[in-house]
Image (cartoon, rainbow, N blue to C red; front, side, top):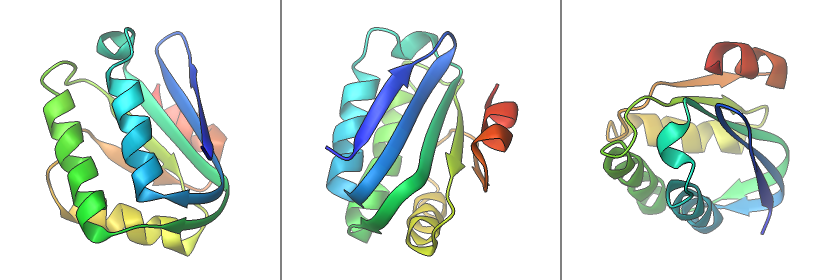
Length: 120
């Protein structure tokens, strides 16, 4: 599992590392959205700084956006900040955003500090 999620006072921070896939992203979403604190969070930060490679299918990425849409029925007020210094992660994010299924505001940042400032 190439990610680690830390629950913070008002949100969640997920650090991605190594070789990451959309299947692992879907697993992370399932775990986060079924967590008892999910209904209380106001931000979710995904830090791909240590991700060496991101691979997956467009259909999994679109499914991820659809899952976010369903999760918004439980908590509709989450800012999603993504630290994405690599091109393959940016490609994934463009498909995710282009699906127009997720109701959550999502912004892309080059540093964790910027992501934290915006998300909170």
